[in-house]
Image (cartoon, rainbow, N blue to C red; front, side):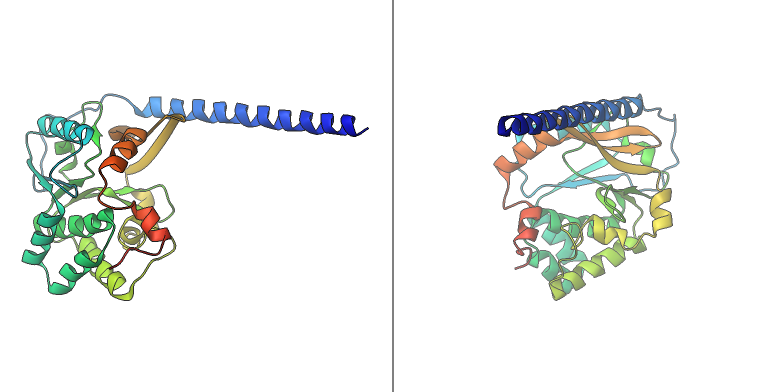
Length: 277
């Protein structure tokens, strides 16, 4: 009798495992079809009436980039010759803030421990002063996309978490009031040692999303997505007008980042309650 019970239990478990496997395969296939539909040649106009300054900004904690990031960024620069290209390290980020902002903003920058949090504050600052486009250095252009196609309007990107707006790509004129509000809020967050409900809220997409209404967020024509092909390959990308324009291989990036990081990932620092000096 006991043997029969055990056999029935094992049969149920086997059916559950089989169903979970089938569901996973179905999900991967559906994700692939979505990705394939979005992954198509980007159509460029002959001319653009640019209102965004032709500045492309990115940053890393040092000028000594890891091999893959360096190669990716060099290709991106060659593909976008219309722009002035700027790669800032943390010292240059601090110097820029010192030159253009009050001491409380400098103090906020110095008080933030995660590199990505420092970078969030700096990107808001430099776009507020100079205008242009900020992009995360891990991204590569896809399908013939060129940044010049984003220069006719300001643009934010809808992130996947609810009410969040991506900070990995921002297109802005100088003096954007939303960026000014973000800078001020980061100063307040640092002064009050604010953590928020998850790691995206002290400086990043959660904070930026505070200053864009839900209606405006849902109306954004660009959004951040991802597709997992298998356990070893997951890609993250930005979709603009139903076309993938920027992408990075999550697995490759995280592997390289872990080998060249200055400190712990911001998720780890947030969960250990250690994001401020």
